[in-house]
Amino acid sequence: MGDVRLLHGDALDVLRSLEARSVHLVVTSPPYYAMRDYGDVTGRWWPDHPDCWQPYPHEHRGSTSDPSRCMFCGAWYGALGQEPTPELYVRHMVQVFREVKRVLRDDGSAWLNIGDTYAAGGRGPGGGRKQASNRGSVSLGRRTAPSGTKPRDLLLIPSEVAYALREDGWGVWTDVVWHKPNGFPSSVKDRPSRNHEIIWHLTKGPKQRFWSHRFGQPGTRARPKPDHYWLDLVTGRELHVPPDGWEEVTAEIDGEIRKRYQRRNAWRGHHCYFDMEAVLQPLVTDEKRDRRIRYGGKSEKTSTFIPPNPNGKHIRSVLSCSCASYKGAHFAVMPAGIVEPWVKACTSERGVCANCGAPWTRVTRSCDPRPPRTSTAAEQAEWNRAQGFPGGTGCIRRPGGNVGTKRVTETTGWVPSCGCHLPQGPDPAVVLDPFCGSGTVGVVAISLGRSFVGIDANPEYLALAEERIAEAREEQRQLSLFDRDREEQVCQTG
Image 1: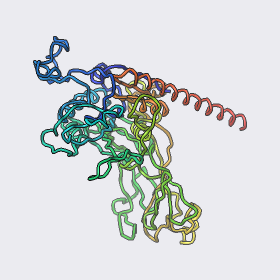
Image 2 (image 1 turned 90 degrees about the horizontal axis):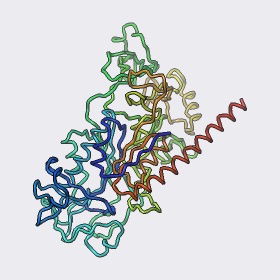
Image 3 (image 1 turned 135 degrees about the vertical axis):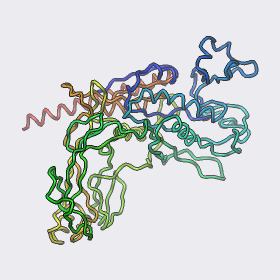
Image 4 (image 1 turned 120 degrees about the horizontal axis):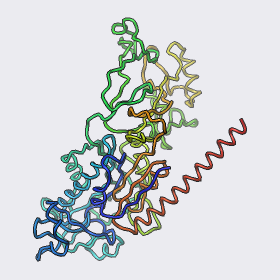
């Protein structure tokens, strides 16, 4: 079971105290711009010139006209999310994630959930009496729309933050739409109610960080020499010795004359750790309706020409997850459903090297379970019916063709992606949330056997996070005891 560290303080200050390249994954949802006031959170100076503020305490820096502005360098004093302009908020996010990038491993990932907001219509976000009565609303007084925008414009905060982070050296790998089925309704009558948010997948760039081997050899951090094998496109066999004349041998594949053998490199380079096998949505066939499948409980119609993938469906860029409710004092709780996929995919289930922290990688073996092409159509149809396709047309192989070939992949083991060769087993991967709030990321990390580091400026939220994580640890301990007792019963029965 992983360790837990909950650190109290400003995210930027605490991040600077953490060791460089010590975190495997960052999942966080920082305060949104001009949306909520998270209670008694101590503000900080956000300096443009870091050397300016050191000799001067807070009460002697503010100018007479604006106490929140430094009279020496113009730095702003306040909490993240309550900046007077979107540009200043984006600049502060870049400062925070510059430290996040420092503590993140080169093969790590960061998932940033960030919401959008609208330009003020004269009163500003949370300026009305109705919003002022809402728990956690921000009362910023009468404000005008930011420069370059019109009243009621969407500010595009997530895109602006992503552009700025990319300019600062981050790689913007992909965006995920978090669809909220139970999103809050809106009182506006001239636009749709928003029920989605954006989650950015950030990495340290396109450079390949480590290499894994197709056939289970330990990985390496330096680019290895090619290790070729040959794939027979007719039988699906993987050959380690080149067939005679493999460059000229042809066969009828997909109704066309093509080369029978493909030479492939067993080494594969990775820009960041991502285990797709850990987040596949399993395939479940429906016996009541022909050519109907379900991925993760959702029904989809299949085609004779595009049969379903027996390994399951790859995770998609639209994630449907209801907003979470919590009886505690935190009013913007992140649901576990938008955290769990990224913890599973971006940290190793087996663990990481105890010496260098490199993740262990999954070793898989693939095979084609369907009958050979030499079998008759009746034999192929009978095989399809046995797999749960009553009509027998789910995965038929066309004569002489290879349309819709789907190879089954199974996990055979785990190997380290480094060359340390330690005798002891791996340690849990480390997950960081610099704005941990009520600790949802920590609950998911501990439940999945990872370690967790959480940072928050509000001690009340840290107390909530500690309570929730303690409950998750106890539940995980009970499950471990149950699994151990079941294994002992099986051994005694055997």
